[in-house]
Image (cartoon, rainbow, N blue to C red):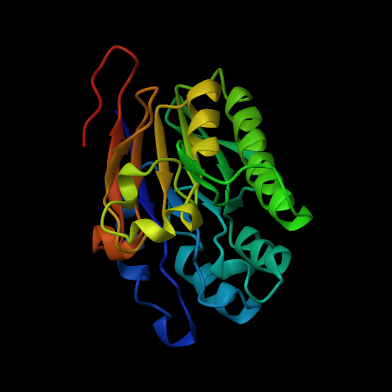
Length: 245
């Protein structure tokens, strides 16, 4: 059984230094990898990224992360990512990473993703250049996620890690008017066609933990305001077993 710890939307700043470290230091006893589903900082400053870096450095398990919209706010996402990488994290944007748990290979494909909405109520690539670019950006994120998942075909498990949601299920509790700004069906299509055993996202603070793509992939919203703890652990079995949690 592969144990996957995950959390998003921790929104750390200087005054929150040390709040998650005690919990993260317990991870070697309960998890094989930690996934961070974006919005790790409040405003995307290097100073805030350094706080996150100190929380995750040398915690005893591999760390794989994507950035969120808050991590882009200061318009220095490359600096934020570099600081997290210096602390040992794999920071993904349209890429994949492989970590190991014993002899088993855990593949993670990641992208921040973007909005646009869901089938029947989604934005279309039509009209003003700004609207077309909005949809094209969402599509590019989804396309790179699909490609990254395909690269992990030889892994024992494959996980899609995003900040924006791939399904509306995990947004239940949020105002429906803002669903188009919380995720996109294009991510779910990428997950189903690229192949994944689990999809993890954040972003929807008032949402719901459990969801599923139309192709049957489990989706979990791990935004900290939703899970109400430092992380949740999900168990991914071998192909012959049934998943837990």
